[in-house]
Image (cartoon, rainbow, N blue to C red; front, side, top):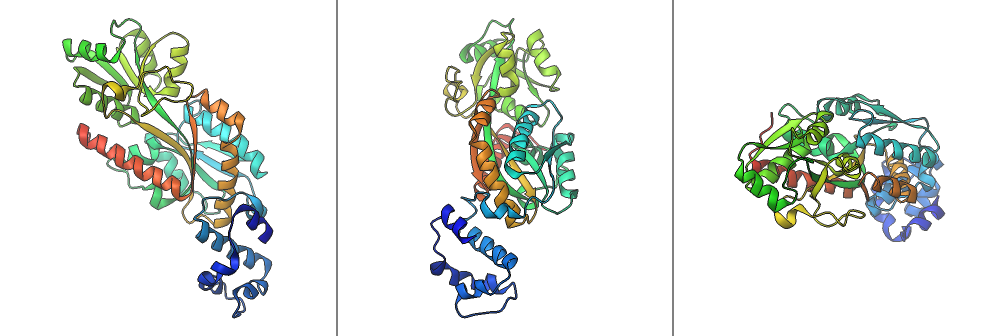
Length: 368
């Protein structure tokens, strides 16, 4: 066990172990003046638990690999709750991750789709799941940040109610034009909408979605004359192709297949800088400042998830997200790995909450 820890970090036990003797004593094992001698008096399982707790304190959960931590976890198949339906972009990513996790963990990782109410149904399923560390939840910005902002009845807080395991990847949004509209660049589109106030439909997947917030923010900051209209995920692309919506904002992954098929025209993406493989696309914030927006994907565990399970998941997910096959397949979906373990993922969610809260205030969007 110690040799494994030494391989994964620069930690030197004798210098720091005295600071954590109170944690070790909490296990009610025979005491000794020398903390290292104290470890030798413990049972193997207790010694392993103490060392895991100690290492998590010293390293802040930032560099775990499965190593010896995964010796006893998982003990059974792992269920991954996905708060959207099958066939969606998050579903495609979650299934890719689940397949690779199965290889890393040595136990099946089984997807359970629980769509509905902007992710609320999935969150409730996670809250009611057995607290045995074998249920995790695939998370994304729409559920972790947007739904709590836009739905008045929501009472959950993902950072309070769950354990952030790791952020996995990020993506952005795209503005696309219907084939029949004459204005195809941002300056032309803004001018075109001002000349026809209220008649130029800017569509989105809504209401209360991330795309809805992006559309309202773009309409306000561009000072255009758009009519912002929400569509269902299935009817939105049809409305764009038919001309019922002149323009449409959605995740890049949702619109990219239509762009590649030549059915709609890409106008701009809403990332703050060019994205790998999409360098040829215009950035919206270069014409309309303040319109950039990103969304993240990650993994959550149950509240108070054990250190053993958390360490094993972080290590396994780190390997999954650095797998060249995963990177290549996600890039096809315009999703880009951004691995942020433990507390770093919690910080990502806090930053996203601050950014989207500002959008809500700026646009005057109120929870419904």
